[in-house]
Length: 323
Ligand SMILES: *[C@@H]1O[C@H](CO)[C@@H](O)[C@H](O)[C@H]1NC(C)=O
Ligand SMILES: *[C@@H]1O[C@H](CO)[C@@H](O)[C@H](O)[C@H]1NC(C)=O
Ligand SMILES: *[C@@H]1O[C@H](CO)[C@@H](O)[C@H](O)[C@H]1NC(C)=O
Image (cartoon, rainbow, N blue to C red; front, side, top):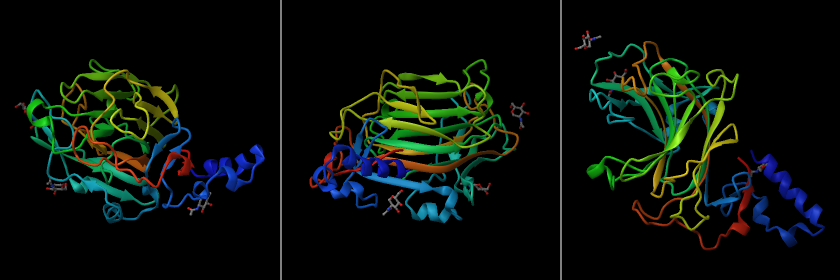
């Protein structure tokens, strides 16, 4: 991932005919964690203070993921309520595991009773809250019918609006096994990309089909969200950009998130035929190989906060990277 950035940096002084030091601060060549922020060259030169890269395929135990600060949901709701029946998906830590050489698996076990009040599902949160960032997730989907796979940013607690109104800021990829290739009565085929207005739950987004002939259950592909909030002073605010395998697939015209959020990956069912369907009759497994994130952290868990900055850093001093 750094190879492209490194070679670009090495090329520039030659082209410009200056000594390297004259035009490029040394820090730019430093791709270690001591970078003074990051400029993501293939995401509109977005400037973010922090980097987090997790290659789950190199790990052997879920303890390593927890040690790195990731949080696994356990014993509370993880995913949407079935509005017709009240059935709920609940996070269960046993649903999130490492498959060495493959990645992190989020499993919805097959054979759960269709009438259960609570379904056992998998959910995990990236360490740290974010207020702006570019997030790229390498995932292999399941084609088993009866679950939904979510990759999204979600308004962080303590639930500023949730208690009263039931809605939160959200920027969300969701893929259902049942409608990966073919729509049904309620949903079109492919990926649902959707922004939610935090107070009303109004939505802006689309269903985007997978490229013709591509099977997202056969191999890993990248799902990415670029979030440039109007509430952050790091970058000019922009519409949320959703990408698949690096290609821009949608920029919803409304409701880019403005509040501090978590990056969440989940895999759930609530038995509603209108969305996840299910529960699945056999184990449904979503595999996450790698997460790459460049992001800012908010100063507080509050609406209207800006990001944490380091005044000794600037965009000019940041490491240039590509996703
Ligand atoms: C920086 O990136 C280069 C090229 O990808 C790599 O060879 C080198 O080990 C990296 N250095 C650090 C400190 O990560
Ligand atoms: C989590 O799943 C395990 C294994 O299926 C089960 O024994 C346990 O009761 C579940 N725990 C919760 C809190 O749902
Ligand atoms: C689920 O509930 C329905 C309605 O109460 C009932 O007819 C059905 O037999 C139940 N199914 C199972 C698997 O328990």
